[in-house]
Length: 309
Ligand SMILES: [Fe+2]
Image 1: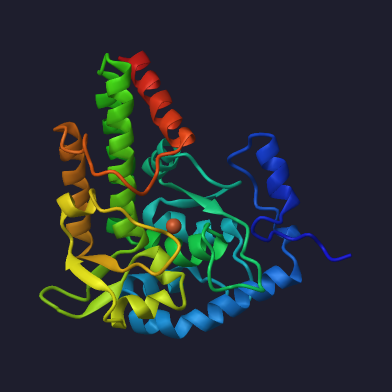
Image 2: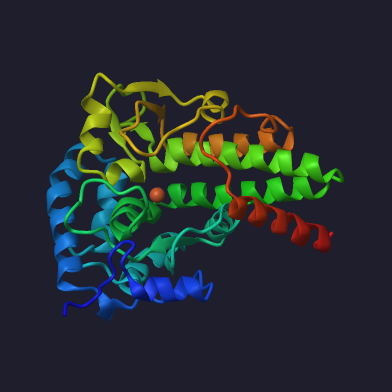
């Protein structure tokens, strides 16, 4: 009998952790099967030339600084030894989906919730949920950059500010409506930047490169997003981004460009101002849908905030 391994949706270790309600877990490295290791090797070898061609230079610098092993699934402890001294960030193993507020609050403390399972080697091209290739090869190299790391922390602070504002609302229905709208705004902002963002190669340059992790972890889309005439690429506009729905099951037809990491930081700051000013209370309906766990995580945060004040 072959080892069960740590394959997406087929890992007894993960199912067990979820049954016990454990969000943060250890990375049981001994459970990765030879097939899991082979999947990592193939994904890495295939995408490396495209990273060199299309990724932001800071991303490639991050890949080198983390000393990611092309031949083996990364050990988070090893990754963190290189990562933490550079930006204070660590990759923290999780059992699966982390509700919105908890996810953002984790970023605020410079920890990145990290999936440890890896996609099935029989279908390496498309995966709706994150895996360790998306999270560690796609996200974590960017976390070595100090400004980008600060952007992630700001997301956590924005979530906290949103919870504080909602805590002051006395009408429960109004509070829920406000939180749902803010979660949508934040999720869309995160999606069109950290997950699927494009950036100018340099000041005044019309040349674009990729810094969004959804693109950086997709062999097909990292090229498609920059070269296809089917993709509309526009300068980042906050009012558009927070009102723009998105779908996760196909290549993105619409992407937004920021000038640089400082620009991105400033826009997250502006998002917080907009939330405080009530400008995110009525964003347009549509994807992403706000699930029960996301809403509950924010409501719990408002209770904690109210208890402190
Ligand atoms: Fe992601």
